[in-house]
Image (tube, rainbow, N blue to C red; front, side, top):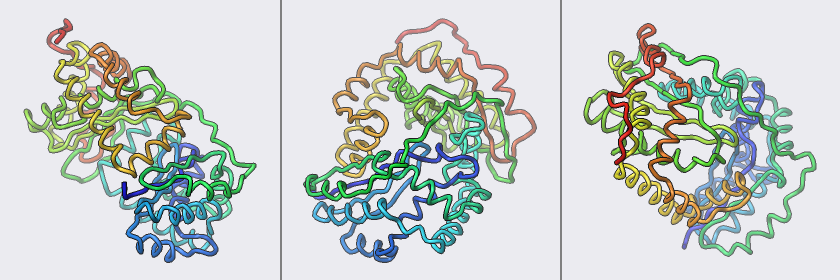
Length: 407
């Protein structure tokens, strides 16, 4: 393989921030690429541009990653630069002010996207009074108030070898890269964040009324975390409901009833909790009907079960996604690092495929039943009409055939 990918994965993300520190992890994502005392941001950019490489970072709720992807022959250079950024970023006051303005614009851009806003509101319902319910960007208020001292303190507390995994994948000689890691300083004060399970939801519906053409809906359920025995069945169920063009929701809401251009579902997992969310944009007069259909399809899946063909399609898609990503050095690097971060080891491809192959109709029904028994929550952004969208939530959908059919 000609390419190489390497990344530093820090076991702290937006979940680990107090309300006052909201957005600190994402702020550091920006700041580390401003360079060190001896390496400017321009020099850093030139170093990767010169070899046709890519360097970037991203922030999640539970970790932050800094990575590079480039030709394997240049991997030692990338390791040296990334390690220096993690070891001793400049965190200059003037850089903090520059990035504060940039992030404020990023917040404004994010706020202008109604589908993003709808998803953010839904997670606020799912995880009330918790950083899991906030966006990783933080808030305008928190970004405005963060100081050099508070940002540096967060960095010193979490960004050390004791709370970090380095992922390497591709065509490089790994032994050539490990020597640099041995020189990373140990920070005695570095700690893994202490996390608590978020409180249960307090309300079922929230609306943000705006003058858009569509109502942007996000319907969601709270689910167990990543170690749950049904974790793979939840992935199959998610794909069956709204994960692809052949999914139940896409086929019914778009293809048959033409109620939306775009409708899909996604599943997210954390250490101790998770969520499944369905998203759609539709005309105001169709919004309540779309919500009703989503609830009906969940109930129908529980009562009738999936067809063997549906399971075959979902499992085939997930299998291909895993195998294809293994051929991309960047995806492989991210996979091995997150595996160690979350599970303490890297599961083999065979292990994951065996777990996927074992999913059957009964497991899918059990996973769908978790949705059915959970409280459905709804966030809507757009020209919401009165309280019409709350009605489907208060009256759980029923199916015409109460007996379960096996296929």
